[in-house]
Amino acid sequence: MDKKVLVMTAVDAEKEAIQRGLRGDSRFDVVAAGVGPVAAAVSTAMALSSASSPYSLVISAGIAGGFVGAAPVGSLVVASESIAADLGAETPDGFAAVDKLGFGTNRLPVNRELALGLTDRLTAAGWVTCYAPVLTLSTVTGTAETAAELAKRAPGAAAEAMEGYGVAEAAHRVGIPFLEIRAISNAVGPRDRSAWKLGDAFAALEAAGTHLTEVIL
Ligand SMILES: O=C(O)c1cccc(C(=O)CC[C@H]2O[C@@H](n3cnc4c(=O)[nH]cnc43)[C@H](O)[C@@H]2O)c1
Figure 1 (cartoon, helix red, strand yellow):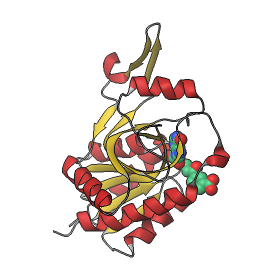
Figure 2 (cartoon, rainbow, N blue to C red):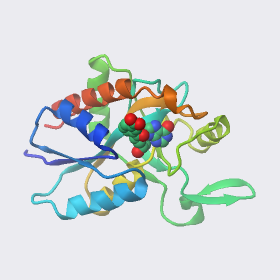
Figure 3 (cartoon, rainbow, N blue to C red):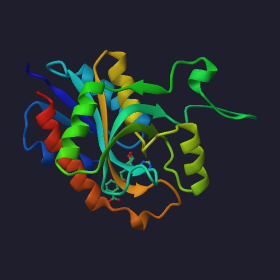
Figure 4 (spheres, rainbow, N blue to C red):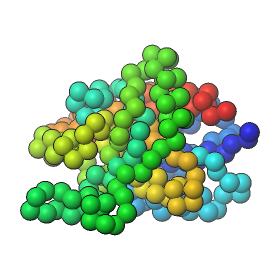
């Protein structure tokens, strides 16, 4: 089957890393939407509605922070679900997610078969890869306290980024399967921008692009 795939990144450097990995595969369109879930959702919806032929898969891809002990710098995380980790309300008993408040869900599913297939392919190629929830936040975590609170809020989460849930929401509204792929550039925790390993993360993202072409048949 001839499938068209839309890959949404936040910034041009992520788009270019994915494109290097895709090596000109014409089934993929890659769009840099800007940083954050709102830009991601709006740009994804616009790309889906203006497409000349329909997309059969939408992917959110980029770099991310990795939770310590779950996803080391330079590794890859293929999302098992995308979680809007700060969408809800503070209450005297702590954070209440939107689903607890009765307003939809803060967890959106991925295409499990494709996600597991890609995880296996990346692992077989020697990339440290895990299949786990990925958080979407509007604010990059900058303290150990927030990192611990998020780990409690979403047990098992391996990474945090800023776009996945927005891309997923746009894809789900029109019934198109979704994936999220993250390459880890930094640890989630106390802010140290100088420690971000962008080169390692972009190399992993490029590999994810290459192996994507092998699992999307
Ligand atoms: O400074 C640079 O040279 C540079 C080059 C490419 C990309 C960036 C970004 O900052 C991209 C922002 C993008 O990265 C995701 N991200 C990365 N680490 C985290 C994190 O710890 N928590 C949340 N998001 C993270 C995020 O999706 C941003 O859109 C800089």
